[in-house]
Image (cartoon, rainbow, N blue to C red; front, side, top):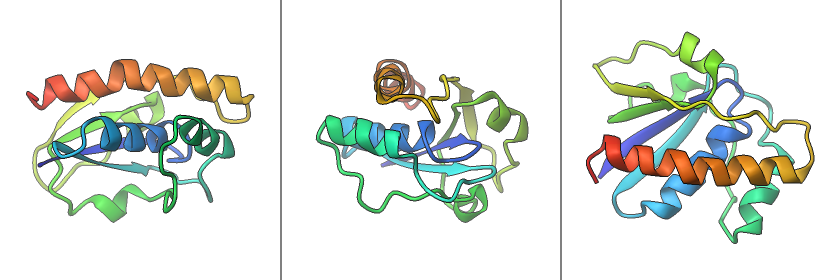
Length: 134
């Protein structure tokens, strides 16, 4: 099974939704993790609500620092915000990376989270599938 790291700054919105969507849509093929370069204290309520609206599991989601996943055997890094792309750390071994920026819905109404969630599913999941040859 391939491992994908979805990286953003706060690890509270976009990367969390992407982690859950990839784990759901590519179950058995890909294990998605998410982390942030400067993690927030908690996952955004809107991100949780957007995932629950699809019937997806959100228990156990919490923002993680990228240092917590540095020793994982990562096959692909996906940065979902420009800041994370600029500050992406150097991993212990070479790893393929792609940049797919998404709008940051933090502090906006639920509708914004729903749009970003659907955009992630429409663009990021197929990109991961393509990059990993699935």
